[in-house]
Length: 590
Image (cartoon, rainbow, N blue to C red; front, side):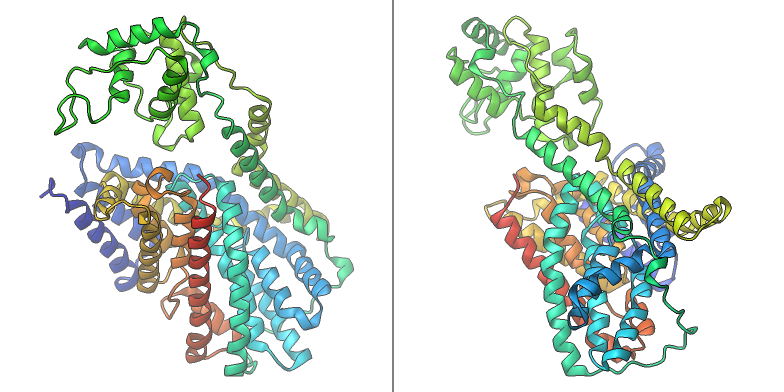
């Protein structure tokens, strides 16, 4: 049964049932449920028996290493922004600019911005008193105010890092965090506006009154002169977005140069080298030339039925233009060009060794081209000139990669947020330490759950679930869009079944990680992530903590929440999916 082509799908079903059963039926903590599912999938997957528990721990550690610092710093930023009054300043600034008539837009914008570093429930707690205050002043639009906050906060919570779900989706699908931020914002903004428009209609149809919620009396708001300045308040949010996004842009520009590709001028003796490659390709022993000949061989070579070629018979062109065109198209982009047996005895440069030490399936195309160019230069130093990698664009990208690293960018923002809290509240260092400790305690559970989800996703990949799902689809021009719908559907079903958007995003992206390449999809994998994020909004009801936060903090009945909160999230979900499909078609980013 282990050899059956359907076995990975059976393993997938058992893994999902384990997660859902433990969380929904037995009320087990999500961390324990995900770890249990990861162990089950690992035991049922291929590999040595002795490694099956160890690889779960390794995958957990790898996931925690990738997202742990970012989530911890985001928790500190959120806590400090709330306690210092920086979040309050941002909300008041929106209201001041847009005015009372546009207060729903101000509330939505506040939720949209604050939910980037601050978890959704905290954002809602922060802004609900303002919605109640506005209703007391206007005596209308109470439900619209609540839905505006919910729409702004929920959409960035599921599409824009550093919130845990989008962050781990970026890791699972090998997406640059800056790209995830930029595309996530591009999709979230119009979806939030659509959500606000529908919220206005729901407010007119339902006419929900403001009721007492039974909480403690709301604290009196601070005076403006007690709050930090707007620039200081916004800096912890804007700084990481600017640094990470700048790094993405500069790296994209540098990669677009394709500095490692061969030109005719790079070949010092094309005719002699072509003859050498021809000779190496005609013999049985493994060599770089033999490997090149294998990659250049088409299906017409050898057995015309199977396309197999035991002995490669290929006329290597001596013309420099033809030769470089072939190598650039069929050798330099190949992630599997390097074979250890073919390069035995060849002295490699440190840069090549470093690239070989990385996971080549996750390397950007430009770095794959660089690795293979370095391998060719090492194997044929007299035939190929060394290429210039450190162009001015690459140097700028290297500098930005330091400052734009998500761990460093969020750490700098956390320092600013702590300094703001220290100054605004005239705290002692002991009081500041206590505030940070509280933030880290809340962030620690998020890190555990997210890393456990990463381990579960890694085990699904080890079980070859992605390959099995891909095999169920015929690959054609529209198959990439089908995968977007598949990702959306999987996340939506998971959200409805167990209630957590984060778990839906983690599981959905883990399931589809094996197909998330631009070559397979026809567009950037970031759109698969946003489709999954869109699906994770769909179908919020009684098993979702966000449903109860909205209902209880807003003073709504369960029926009113189902008619408003559940509906608005369906609208946000479908609007995000529509934007994802549109951008994937018009702007594939490949």
